[in-house]
Image (cartoon, rainbow, N blue to C red; front, side, top):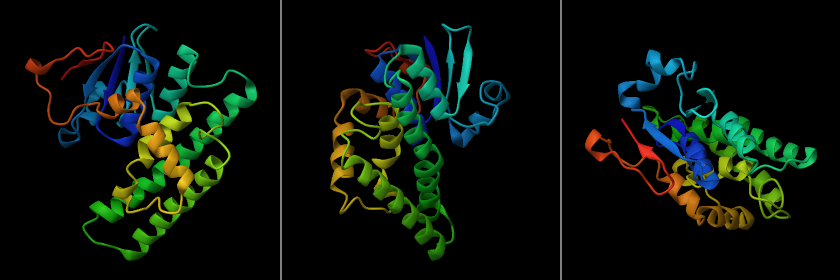
Length: 223
């Protein structure tokens, strides 16, 4: 059993989608940002950075892993799935995973902040981050023009990481118009049953003790 500490964010969805794709049993512990639960002392012992997601692998001496990309690699290597084992194939997946971690995620995050949340609308900042997000999308468009999946012929953790952010591109104010290959890929990944299940974790709203639920993959929702 794996304990997943998460919230309904793109980085959180990466891990819940991977767990669903891998068929691993897990318990969901939703953290409420409004209550700063991710900064609680007990949680900082799991993730010193005070962010989500994080996991604790109860089957591996309660081993804790934080940072979404690191968790994806850990789960792929634990199961031998969602990442090639040959040196070149593994490297390609990790390269594109790092592209998401260092580029797509941070740039879309900044676009979200200035386009949606900032109390003062700063046109320069909005334009700067939206243009960079679009540029990164165009990089992916070129890659997907000759590859079915982000890192090549096989579905991998690189696809999970990218889709978790890119499917919400409208929230960043960035269109996929003129990017047919990225549109094709986004729709294809979004139609996977495990992706749909993982995207729904944690469920909307608060989960109380009376609402504890064991779902079909063995995951449990706890408070």
